[in-house]
Amino acid sequence: MQSRFSLCVSLCAVLCLCVNDSFASLTNNTLSKNKTTTSESNNITEIVSHHKTPQYWQISRAAYKDKLHGFWLGQSIANWTGLITEMDKVGSPATMPFYTDNDWGSTDLPAVWGQGVPHSDTIDFFFVHNQQAWGADDDTDIEYMYQYLHEAHQTSLLTAKQIQQGWLTHTYSEEDAPLNKKFPSDKAVKENFLWESNQRVRILMAEGMLPPNTSEPKNNNKYMMIDAQLTTEIFGLLAPLRPDIALQMAELPVRASAKYDAYWISQFYIVMHALASQQQLSRSLKEQVIIMAEQASAVLPEGSTPALMYDFVKQSYLANPDKDNWEKTRDQVYQRYQINSNDGYVYKDPFEAGINFAASLVSLFYGEGDIVRTIQIGTLAGWDSDNPAATWGGLLGFMIGKDGIAKAFNQSTLSEDYWIHRTRRNFPDHTPNQVGEDTFSMMSQRAIKVIDQVVVEQMHGKIDFEKNIWLIPSVNIDVVTNVDQ
Image (cartoon, rainbow, N blue to C red):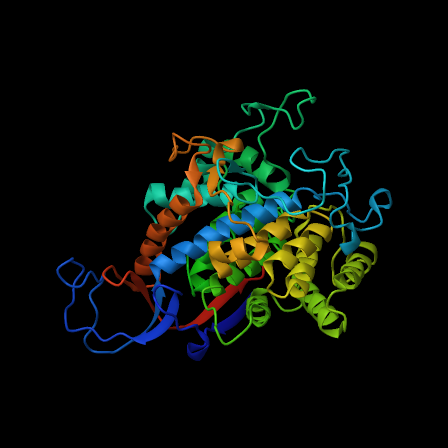
């Protein structure tokens, strides 16, 4: 059983930008006969046919690098802000009532496991400043690993074996994990920073199993959890303007841990990130986000629980005259899905992809393209709050770039240092003389080289190194989603 959707990226809708100011425009790229891949021929990476004059999307590599920096920074701010309220409010009698806007700035309550977090006891935005490093967490570290695997293998499409070896090399098992104390007064215990489906995936891979078998229900009873959402959004950014290519690249990484609803939901987020490259000066961020969400929702199989959830949250938002009252829709989500089991959804666990997908849509719609408000709502909405917040923080951070983030939060000294070895292992130390092992700038620069390969090998596009742009063929996108996944 398959569901087919066609996604045409409108030629007139893409933002036409100056090279130093923006990154995507459309051009009729006419090149003389037999231009080659050599530096003597204008640094174009492929031979261009002289029989046609194809249309290309033109994307500034320099501007895209800044956007990728914004992705990592926005995701980190949202991740560490959302962690403050993670699992505080999950709809159980012991955790009710849910948080509301009135709780912003108040003392954080313990999560369902009885503890808060060591980095903050107040529900508020969390920032890391210069001379300190952002700690890795599962919202960023597996994505970091996947980018690294593309770099290390010099490939635009990872194999199942490369993914398995990457997991085994760069994540800890429960047996070889280092000792960790969440709070200084805690007893030190082994912590490999893998949970739910990801933990099961690690065990199965150690036994020799490869994706997609690692997400088959008979092997992994956690296949409906949220894990794939937070590990694969980056594939959308590694395939700018081409959600079909992004989904192809992400297929095995998603299927490492997700199937059915969790698989389709992860695809939705990947498509959203791929479409983020088509920004439009003529539209507000609010309008752009809603358009992107509507386009991405086409990947959700008709009649599936995620598709019905999307329609319900969107209609609740549109029907609500008070766009500050996001709590109304969140409470409706709780009643409709957690309590009353509508649309084929039966709630079992606050880590599930389904309930968190609905919650994430509340923050997306009511945040209306404002990164500050979106992260705030995502943090307060409940359930696994750091994950939806991090997803949208990364997306909107990409859209506005690192300078846009600094302006939005009125922060001028935000750190770009990244401490991947907080949670993972065996990565190169790119910054041996400073905190952490990497920086968002270096991570973004290396991603540009990965995208170079994707543009040429998967999109059959070109790179003009002299102008520092990608030339991506303009195509109508036809994607087939396997409903049986």
